Length: 130
Image (cartoon, rainbow, N blue to C red; front, top):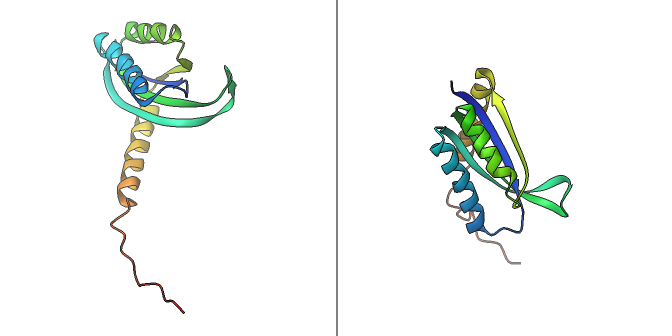
């Protein structure tokens, strides 16, 4: 039986963009290979940590939301735990209400980003020199 899960992980901030993309795709590949259906994937970027972890004050965050059998969750967590480039990982099981709320939040954020996307900026008037 497949259930809904959300996994967030924090990578070392010293990784370059290519290494980050490779890690994100590696874990996505593990989930898909093990029978998971990826519902949402996000690279959340570099953020300041609440406390220092392994001498790092910042970390690069990534998130997966997926539907998977328990074996897929165990396999991706096992793989993440042995990777020294990851500072922290967290997987939680989502119920239908949490999944709907998370999906709505993503949709609202996308709509807000679209609404407030900067249009072509044109100057209103030339500055007056006096």
